[in-house]
Image (cartoon, rainbow, N blue to C red; front, side):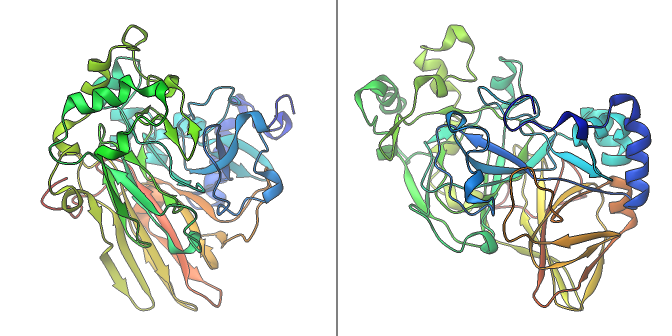
Length: 418
């Protein structure tokens, strides 16, 4: 292994063999691909220890890289970390002891895997999801809009949250999330917080309000909206980008460097406070009905004999259906066939069974580099054909799956239209 945390070269499928191996994998899985765990560290955060990663492996990339507090699902997006390994954030498909990235697979067979329309428009799988797991809150921050991110050659990042009960047996230190700004907050007040960055706690949370996090619910967060995620383990379907800007200088006594405020700001704007504040969607941040316009309760999408499929992420961002997600629960001994209009990334959070020809098993503990049977990519063709889910265990089988843009003819809306 040439660098700590990197995939061993001997496991990787050479590019000139990818087409044949991918075809064989899709045939064996009847349109499904087995994915391996994708672990991502963050140097400025404190792992929450609920990802089922073995405690001895929390610093598998090296202590200097920080602890592993994220697991990414069906990702073709690279993590924007300093000192990263070449594949950090990318999901790998596994077949007969060999591995290849989902990104390469989509480049090889885009229309088959994600559908012709999505391939034609994006030339990639433009979304991803993750488990985000921390001991305490993270800094109040925002993700740039598509327009602002384009100024640094990147894409914007709307995102969403769902708090799966199965991964939240404990609250950890602060199960509340500050979101937005108090109605009536002024730009000058935010500017003073940025001016005071190096004087200790810059006081940005004094301008915000915290919402208690509730298991089995979620939130939709458009670009430009400030938020300081709390300590529940969070499932996060989002756009395929890793841009952000921190607005809080100290969190739980830990200093946040100014470089994380301007990470995705043009170099000539790194000290232009007006430019930095202009990245905020002011109207959404000071919305007097913020919760009404962003809070998500599950909505039943389909129900049958021994199973129920619920919307857990829905709504529009700026009038567009950019991503969505569902939670399927199948009771012991039951089975169902799910048909979706497009591809999805699946992660099992409880129980065991089968999905198509592949086994499903929720792991109790995972060693770094170990393969599991809990994650699957459901191709466009398989989703439209229908995939059978069977619960072979003694407890409910629960899986979360997320979708890309414009997959569904319609999705439920939040408070009119978020």
